[in-house]
Image (cartoon, rainbow, N blue to C red):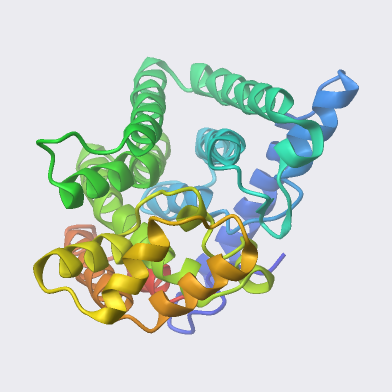
Length: 335
């Protein structure tokens, strides 16, 4: 395993090595956490874990923990907890979105069916909850609040905005609950379990809310600009399922205000049948060439800058510089 900080040359070398050591320990704990005597669950629970992933949320726990004592057992348990929660949500999301692939491999529901995939997600949530119980009532409460937000974010994405709701505010609230909530919790947990203190926990909580939305807006762009070989997901999955993204919201608003031939074609395709791969590919190509993609990326950069400003309130330690570099990497990434 290579340190996730190795691509940032200005990051403190000792910190990078320590992070790598701790992530290796977390990976071992994740493997232990998904082990179970029931043979089918033993396979299904490992399916996405062994497919890889960025381990972004454990990294956030560790970087926040590096402000205190990152090597505490409690910090490693917290890092494992957030990744198990994230993995569980992916099993559920893929069922609801009918996503055929995840992390470059076939989605669990495509292999074992919806019921097994949902139960696997429930199992992973249960294992995460077990870890939270070892970390004390404050962590249990934080994990429960985060789990609630994950559920509400998925619900609000599914039902869409009401007639009185602003579609942009609604979409950003979905991103805040579905993505930013767990990133925020990861940073807060790292501060709590490492002994870094309540002020650091408060900074990391606020930082995660900004960085999580920036990350997801960048993901909206990546979903259009990449392909399955680089991103691990088929481009346009949300388009096919009729799930709004920031680029499509921007195009729809522009079409409502000043329609032209280009936006009319995009909106017509968005509202049409995207069952055929050729139709979906044509829509993705149209959106790639639309200014809405660049506008979405600028929104992500704006939130990235706000998140970095929040990090300036952390003590001047190597972890702060590393967090700033990682934040920039959340937006400026290829995969």
